[in-house]
Length: 189
Image 1 (cartoon, rainbow, N blue to C red):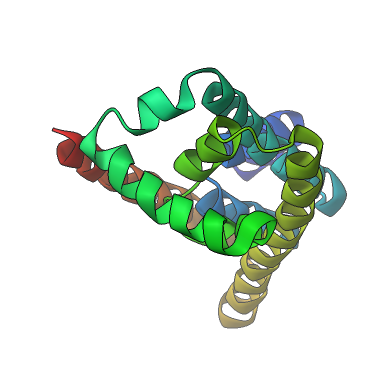
Image 2: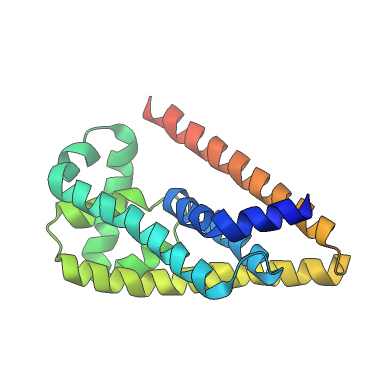
């Protein structure tokens, strides 16, 4: 089983990292860092695909914001509250707010749409967003790597335990994401 998972991660692991950071972000970066520590993924491609996944997500919402952002953001209670919070931060800190927003859980969509909706310069957005993504990716991959290091100290070098721990982390991350998603859906109604 371990050999099959290793083969799967070698073939599709980076696509999974791209999709994971596209959809969620922090939790998948922690898991990816864990897998890097234990040799299932290589650090440089993991880092690059992590940035590409998150950047693709944010560019989609930036351009969606350019297209219909204000109408969408002010169209329902859930996004209206987040819109106000993100707008205050952007008004107060300008482009630096990209760095703050990056570390606020659940604030990836609204601010990116807001940057697009307000006509923020695309190249300036791209430049500072890339810098903040490099910092964000480095921090969360490192934390996942450190967690993997701690697991190695606690459990020794037993690959089955790493695999089981990794699978448990992924499952817990999915449950947390589903609960968060359902709460957001309930808040919209």
